[in-house]
Amino acid sequence: MTATRLTALLTAFRPGDEALGASELARRTGVPKSSVHRLAGHLAAQRLLERDGGTFRLGLKLFEIGQLATRQRGLVDAARPYLADLREATRNTVHLAVLEGTEVVYLDIVRGPDAPALPSRIGGRFPAHATAVGKAILAFSPEPVLDKVIAAGLRRVGPRTITAPGLLRRHLAKVRADGLAQEREESGVGVICVAGPLLDRFGTPRAAISLSGWSNRVRAERVAPAVRTTALTLSRALS
Image 1: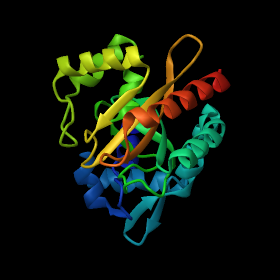
Image 2: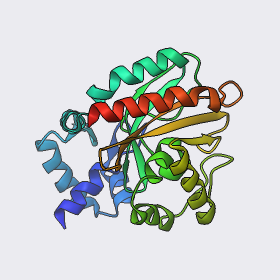
Image 3: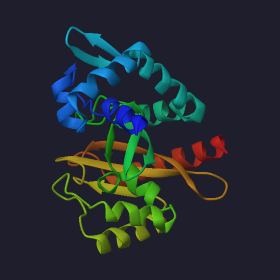
């Protein structure tokens, strides 16, 4: 289908890509090179791609659409003051993320001066099972959502990533009982995160916030009350 091929072209770009030629787009998508030229031309005409000599780069129109999607959710604008307060109180990095498929997508990041340099970026994705925000959402999600994540494979991301389905299920049961999720070096070396879900009035997770810092500096039990309070207060504000 044409829509599938157009989507494949747009999602072929990865973090760090400046521009891609037709040959590379064909290699990454499996779309014939002749079709790549034709479809990329259509996307360029709509400003979803931009021509750069013989290559293509993502167009600013995509950024505009992305900003609209974020604002429609109302999450970023509503959450930003709370994220900023949590960052100021802890001097560590605070994330706001939602679950999409088997991954979390970061909607906002407020970086702290005492936190490690993290690979997360606004609009970036990360495997849900390897993040505190992902586990905070999965713990309160319907069973089929977790089944989908497990079926996709629990690949190892950090030195302590949970890769066994049974262990992940037991871990999420504890998260559900505690109301908070933690991960220590599951998403990367030397990183600890504590996350709380943003629940609607029916108890369904809408998103999650997390605080991330150095595993040898941040004590989860000390920052957990601040994360819990922020998540609960923001959940009420969104409801």
